[in-house]
Image 1 (cartoon, rainbow, N blue to C red):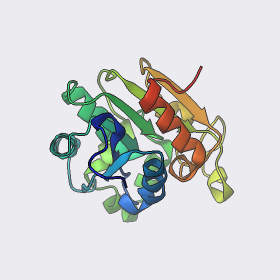
Image 2 (image 1 turned 135 degrees about the vertical axis):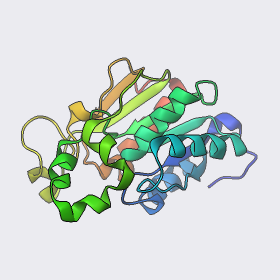
Image 3 (image 1 turned 60 degrees about the vertical axis):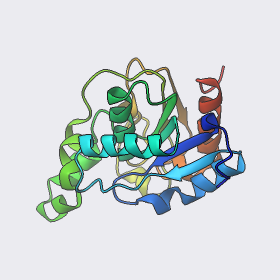
Amino acid sequence: MSGDSCRPERAVVLVPGLWFGRPALWLLAWRLARHGLRVSLYPYRPLRQSLYEASESLARFAASRGIRQVVGYSFGGLVVADFCRRNPGAYGRAVTLGAPFRGSQAARRLYRCPVLRPFFGVAAPLLIRGLRGPVPPGLGIVTGSRPRGLAGCLLKGGAHDGVLRETETRLRGARDAVALPVSHAGLVMSRAGVRAIITYLAQGRFGD
């Protein structure tokens, strides 16, 4: 990751998802840094922190580093959206990657099993019902549309990334949205995901 001399608009906070944490974003962070971004990985505990607590902590984390660009992966996208709603003057542009804005059919199925419920923690209501409220300005949405391997068997019918349906990741009124031919993991592991983030943070859109 590049030095602190990087201009504020060239800095970004990455917010990880529910179960994989910051290590899942190490490759993405490295690739973004190679494009000249100063990258910070936001530490939080999604199984224990409420959405309000996570988004307020994100606001303090970003402000302490002078960062105004935020990117959230999977459940982290919900944290980013809530942060943007509560702090409209604290950010410039925001990107979500495979965020379950409308809840997750796959999560609802898994939650029916009592043995698995502890793995959802306080995030369960959001994963089941989705995020309600207005769409924050300056939000760009990236979704995957091509599952890989066995993930392709988990959801049937319609475009999906193996974890979320494309329709579950969309918010009407977002500034821009793009579907990439990648899986849910591919959103942060692929070069296509990196290009989408770089393009949106620089231009406020994903392309012509």
